[in-house]
Length: 131
Image (cartoon, rainbow, N blue to C red; front, side, top):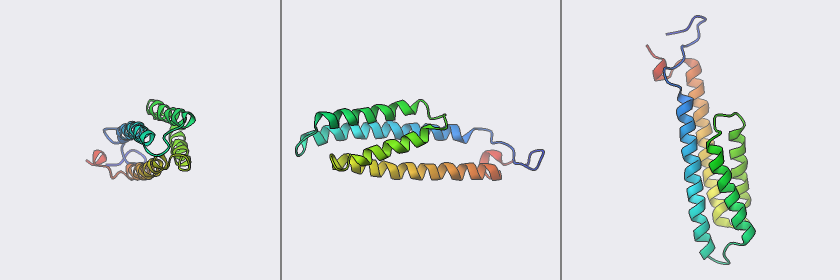
């Protein structure tokens, strides 16, 4: 059950690789939700100004681009900064700000889950590490 120096053996499958897939799926889902929200917000109230639309499209493009670089250490802070940028839209486009708050909660929960998996992996309690 334990390695040479009393450390647990590594799991048969890398759970963090699967977790990156979950994070990429969340980013794609968020980009889709924001794209659809942009269409709805454009029809409501005063509509969307040119700078608001282009800024939101830039955030959507950054979310999609960050899917491909999730294996790098600095990507998660960038994604959290993008959530902050969406929350900053609250004054101009409240619906987009709400989407930012909701997905910030999703990302906080996913990061907590990632920390728990890493802790259990270090303790040797993952099912793939059992004899």
